[in-house]
Length: 578
Image (tube, rainbow, N blue to C red):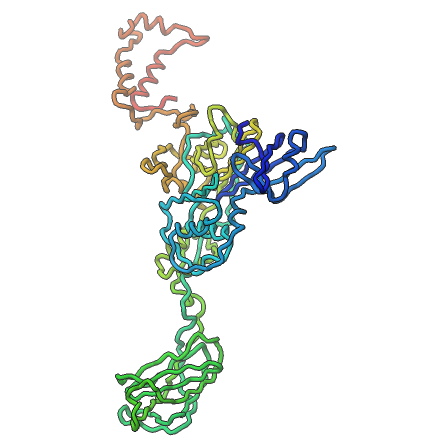
């Protein structure tokens, strides 16, 4: 057993003891999930460490620490056995600290990650390729650092993993390996699970909510009553008043209203009392014009009684001197336009919808609506919901690998890619490992679960088996990273053409075969066929020797040279040798 695979118990002060005789199962899942299941009996050689298995202490396994939160003990004969499953301390370390402030604005991922990891004891390595450069928040913070970290990772659309207090973050993690998993060769316990519970063919998206919660209605009304002295002002030939304290009143139903009047050099003020609310407007302007003034909006939608009172505008320079009295117009007709509450789609800056082509075959299956607090452009919203619609179903493959010396399966990690040929399921594909279960028992083979294959509803599992592609289609030679095109499920591998195990039933030489320069077996065959003899013609052999050879027995069969010639002729013409 490697030193790193020896189970160790560590207390909160850092004191450590080995735990001999314990078995461990390490489970590694998606997005950093790591848990360690341990099981063991108390014995003379491990009793010191056994008694240290207490709450909030740590198991150390493969140089990683797992926090003990739940512990189970039971008596077996006269001995005590412990079984417990423990999560990696990473999650607890981040959860135990908090950011109390709230931040609003546009932030780089580096700024947010620095904030999250400060004081936690962890550092991070961030690869920004194919990830957003800026994240926008209205209220980032006021939560524990684990929640905030998960929020940043989710908003980035990134993956992460960690080892030895270093967190690795990128659009995609893992490497493409040349490891092969083949049915009846090095794997067993193959299972496939298909899940279409999230399948949908239609989605509707809503952009950022409008700041105003109402809009002008089609309803306009006149005032209902008035007090004070009014006259016809000769310049505009419209009713007006100079009486300070003159009023007019009306009722309306809605969330607010606007008021149509005439603004001019001698204007004063109208103070509107609307229930418990009051609003004041001025009619002073150096230019005389008819104007509709928004008085109030975004009130609760209900009936209101309004009273407007005329007063002097002390900011009007034209009415400051004696004899220059202000006046306000009070027009006849429907001078009050009400506001109404926004309903449905009109509450948002943009709204759009997307239907998958699969809706024609499977019908309209509605996904949960998408809501955005930032998108105000309809095209951007459409592209977002189209990308987010889950018009696929998941196919999950799991298997147990048989550890072979030449395979080196211990070098395969979660998030890596490996080749799978599972003939009974019709799968011939490069798949990603999303879960790995490994054991301290060196004789127990690891178990791998491969990531979901997202297949469109019209596809079948049989379509996964396609022709061979080169690894260069998957890995960018400049960066060493996996290409995005390789992650879509469209690039597959036929291991019959890979280095390693060759499936004999897939060997074919056809008319389209390309050979290296200087080597073309068709030319060799052509030379051989022109030089061969037959029963009547001399060649490399004499015709008499040919007749003798035709009578040679191999086992209980006679060698048929004519059949050999026929096969060579077929190869020369680009035929298939079977």
